[in-house]
Amino acid sequence: MELPIYELTIDPTEENKYEVTAVAFVDAPAIERDFIAFAANQPFLGFAIQNEECREVFGAAMIPDMLIYRNDGMGEYYVKFSAETIKQIAEKFFTKDYHKSANIMHESGTPLDGVVFFQSLIKDSTKGITLAGDHPDGTWFLGAKINNEALWQGIKAGKYKGFSVEGLFAGKPTNAAQMQYQKILAILNGTDL
Image 1 (cartoon, rainbow, N blue to C red):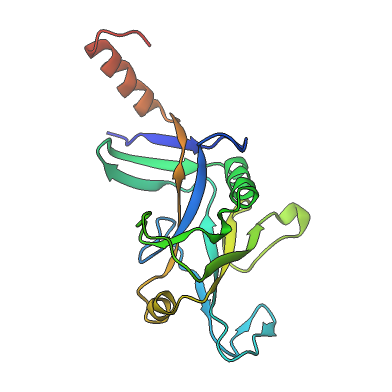
Image 2 (image 1 turned 30 degrees about the vertical axis):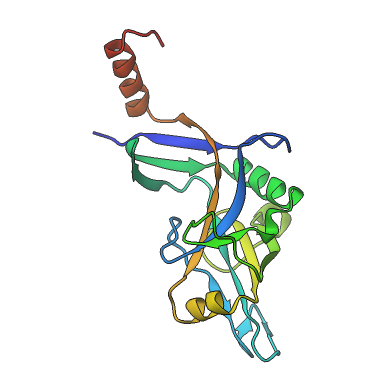
């Protein structure tokens, strides 16, 4: 059976609860892309960083239309985000000052001090905003300054390899298999869709 696919969204209005509130540093990013950790004198995109130890990471946080596998209390399924939703997420993230909200491995009750997201870029080749690599237009990139010693040592040791967004989303099924499944559940429960 084909697994259900849910397209996740947020509400771009400030007062709504559907939003990304933090970014976690994780060992295995769901988007399967690691960030780049910059140290002293490391070349990047044609220039060199010349300070003693840069302590910066840069990489993809969200990739549009990428299927992300989930297996939880709802069962097995995929989620994805559109390019438009990712743009709304990025805008709301900074509008509400969540750029200082980071944690490790989605331990929401343990916010990290000494981490700030200071770079944000959404790839858009029509505007000339491109990066090396195969990321599609609409990919959201983040750059963070890491002044938290334990986190920096974990990044350098390869323990934390990428970003994972954290928030509350609305979702709707996008594939026929999920819609058929919902119809079957409605019939079994005696409700009407």
